[in-house]
Length: 112
Length: 115
Image 1: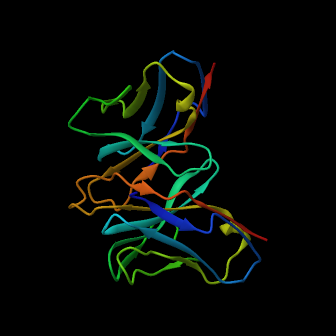
Image 2: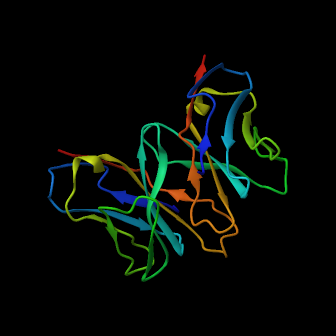
Image 3: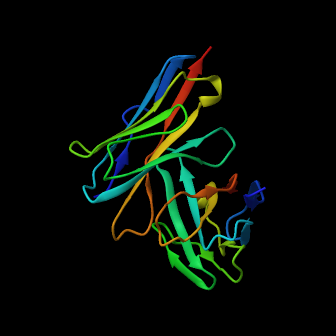
């Protein structure tokens, strides 16, 4: 069946380092991917999205990479800051499906 | 400020006592949805609405009802709550621009405990 999973439940990085959060998906028909950030006590917030016709998309300090061959998605955060500490979710959807399928999340901890 | 507002933020109730969690958005979004978030399971969709008077089941609709009488409001109703409905609930909305983007705007969540 469909699944969206994350390789690591918790990622700890030093402030100023780059962070990479990974996500695997199983549905080859998935054509849209999105990353959300959820801070403690808050709802998820949109970070960046990418369509399957792209391999890479950049935002402010964030980059999403999509490897359709191995069904892998990653979120890269440059110069990680304490404010980046949160749980990060990937989600995907494909043609004919009604709703995003969310992964279970990776907690990013930024050490000072 | 553009936002999705849920109430209450926290709710403790007992099995069988009907409750309603309200959701309101001020962005004139056509699409609204309810999710529940459980540890290790991510966000799962309960119900969604494409527009006023149009609602449909998500992945986990059992035990829930919704209504969409007005564009801005999308309440979640638990007619007879059970302990397995203890969860963190999120309401979300987005414009329905032909589903070009799935960028959802989420509320701050409602933590429900059913004893």
